[in-house]
Length: 123
Image (cartoon, rainbow, N blue to C red; front, side, top):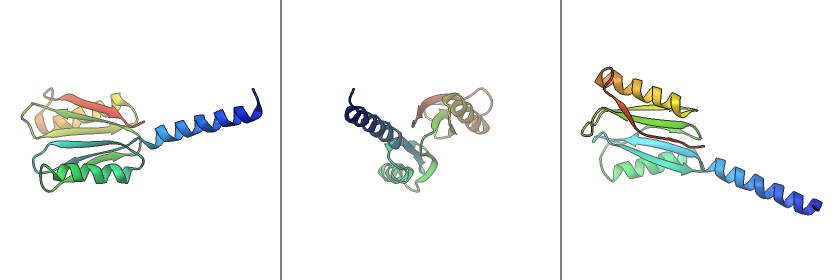
C-alpha cells in the first residue's frame, strides 16, 4: 500500500471516529406535564439542551433540563403508564444508569415499584 493511500485511509478513519463521537451529546427536558423529552445525537451538549427545551415547550410549560451529557448513558424509570413521576439516571454505563434511574424513581414511588422504560448511550 502506498504511503499516500495509507495516509488517506488513516485520515478517513479518524474523520469517521470523530464524527461518531461528536454526534453523541444528549439532553432530557421535563415540564409541568411531567413527561420527559429526550434529545439525542448532537455534536455538542448545548445543542441537545436547546433542542430538548424547544421540543418540551411544544407540549407543556416551565420546561427545564433534568439531565444532559456529552457522551454518557441515561435511563428513565417510571412506576406506571399514567404516572408523571419519573426517575432519571446517568452514568458511563447502561447498568449504572439503570440503577440510578430505579433508585431515583423508588425515592418517589417506594421500593419495588419502578421499572426502566427507556435507556440509551450517547457514545
